[in-house]
Amino acid sequence: RPLVDRYKKAIENPEPVGDVINNKFMTIAPMICMEDGQAAREHQEYRAGRIDPWFATYFDTIPHFASRAKNEPRPIAQSRLRVLIEEARAQEGLPGPFAAGMTDAKAVHEAGILAGNPDEVSETVQRFKDAGIDQLVTLPRLASWVEDEEQIWDSIRLFGKEVIPRFKR
Image (cartoon, rainbow, N blue to C red):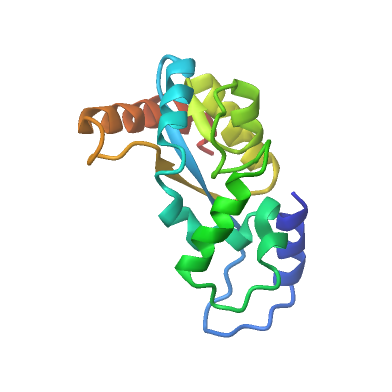
């Protein structure tokens, strides 16, 4: 919430670098929604780390990791980001999307990972909403080059059928 509040305050008097001023705060979260919440978290755990190349781009925007990257010259090279991720991963109790070893529903929720049954996933979506997030982009925690593509579609369908309607205005 403090990051959203800081952004919303700053956007009131922006110094635009382009033609558009976007008064929306967007974040991304890994997502796997299954009827069996524990199975979803176990699958999320199996997939943990396999999306690092995509999340690496945002490494220094994740509050738990920003301090690790604050003295890095910009832009941070992907090779350097991989080193920073591996260093972070070695930290016991690592929070957030790079975490491994998390199958506990509360820990997954607190890390902002949408992994569980529709009720559990909805609780985490609500947490983002309560923090003032305007747009939540979900990244399916499945990959068609590894899993059966139907698992991906089942997760997306269940999310669309059971979770999204709870947040329609």
